[in-house]
Image (cartoon, rainbow over all chains, first blue to last red; front, side, top):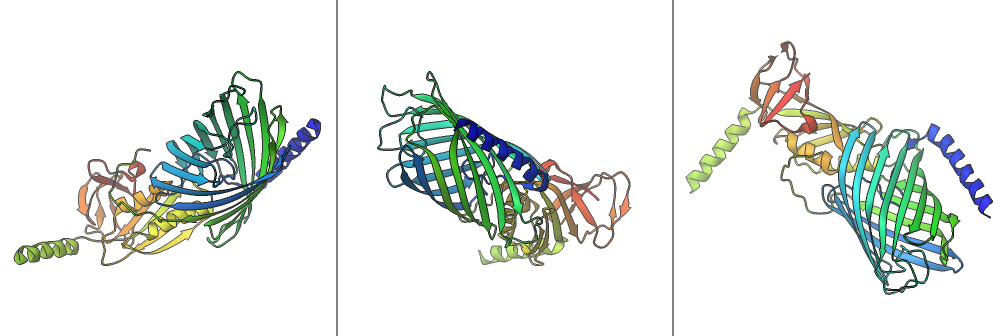
Length: 268
Length: 150
């Protein structure tokens, strides 16, 4: 089973090289956030559905409101109607060039959940109470978009059976498949992403590494439809759900929040 | 009180009348590749009350702005709109009805409601629709002065 997974990953990376040669970079990742911040005063509504699989099957709906209230800052508030999540991201550094950028951001996430941990791995989709903080580094080039984020995970529910702390890391890559040339904002965009999500517990040998390819359709340069599948490449945890089919729809409202036109000094 | 208001209104009208206008601007935005990002800049620029029309080349990230005749265009508001959308400005050029038709090396002058300085090597006679570039880093004025080149 493990050998098959590695073969699949090798096949994916071989495909990436071919895709990367003929495509442009995109960083509107499906699972992770890039170090970029959404446009100031914009609001995004995101509805996602996950069909979880593995040792146990279940489904998960999540509604999220994302907004940028200030330049370099954005916030997400989400709920799956039992657990709730708050996420804050600050862009710390940005170096822009035509069709490329290098950016660094800090993020802080807290999840409040009524559920007790039931697995050694720290579950990050609302299955338990935790906080997560870390850094994101993103490099976007004309043909290459790659983002790496790493952060600490800390369980807030007391349960001596499981380790309290862990490290989570995500490596994301994205490409534009269609259109070959941008002509107007009404063109439907098709993007392809591959993200690797890993976790290593501290003072515990539990770890996993999942791979999550996804296809994204962008309509009218404003609405996104994401379809992806996640499964483990390597996993020694006893997660009940280590596979998931992911579907989400996001809609971005530009200039939705009140404006503040005070001219300011830009520190870039 | 009414007299005061009248005088303020007269001063304002004279002040506007005495300025030459920035007629149009061209911006090359940097740091983006996607149409959603490009649309964020487009929407932010479209919110500016002095902007009449915007034409965009998404592929090259070039935004051409034409301004309303009855409103003063603001360089700061254009700059802030692009930076607040999450991106930077690689090139910012303007076309104006300049009061003086000659660009003189190191000359500091007031026009279009701004203080400018020619950052050029040799003097040049300006053509009617001379495009000039603002060369300040991040389009941030230094001691209130924007540096111009062509």
